[in-house]
Length: 112
Image 1: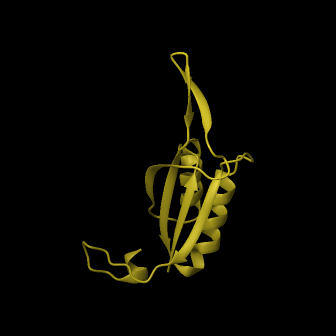
Image 2: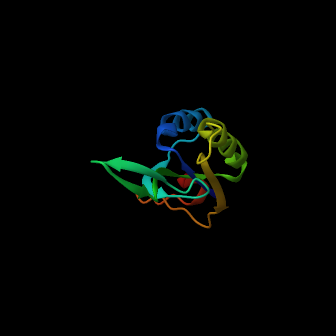
Image 3: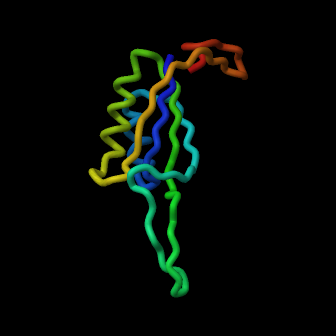
């Protein structure tokens, strides 16, 4: 089992959710986060004063999948989140040691 975590631009969330649904993903967790990478930040004007916005709004997606779904899920996220501009985000894949569904007690692959 793997955990796929992706940081994407907020306006791409619906596109990514649709792509994941088509890839067979039955559930995702989305969290509003702030961060920056190569994109750094930008300056904004508020009531005539210029200020720097260091951390930009992003969406963090977490998807628990079986090993055979990983490539399909990563490709779905990468294709749907790609705008071709800086700040499109990153995808991280890491091992998931154990999963338990609280309601039924199902374990690992059955719990996904």
